Image (tube, rainbow over all chains, first blue to last red; front, side, top):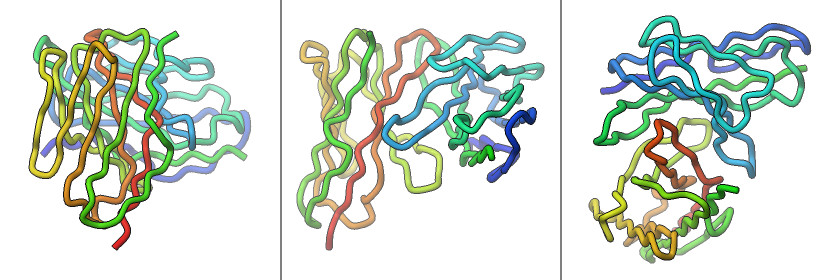
Length: 114
Length: 111
């Protein structure tokens, strides 16, 4: 079974802190994604990566950065956390290529910024 | 601008009936459309994928249609059960390495 593992399930951070959310997948997927999910807004794409050291902005990249130094690991970084970044963050991965495969999600990381 | 709209935020139906959920999109030309199920506090789980040249896809009690002229997908659950209660998300693959999701429809099946 495909496994996407997010390092932290629940975090509470203070405004201005630097926050790292880590994600690891075990299926050798090329693509990895970070989404945030808020009530009424659904899943919004923050960043995605289609290869090591490659990244693309999604719909809401402001206030976030990402790092992909190894194929299996994709990190989301909040340089200076703010209260409007309180949300559930979902990491996902998929194969690339012409025959598109499904996206596999982690269990989510609930971040509260106080 | 690109938009994905799912018909309603919440849908309540009686056990045994067919649930029909709608996904409409604008300013997309998706090669694939996918449906996911999400339970509270969990990540979404893939259910079905339908390609742009397919009209209909079935899997057990699930059926998905895809009308690229209307820019709409319908997701049906027949003989619904309380265990089908969850939020259902449609997702569009732009064939560009990224996926965009609708806000979801929360389905409640009452016994």
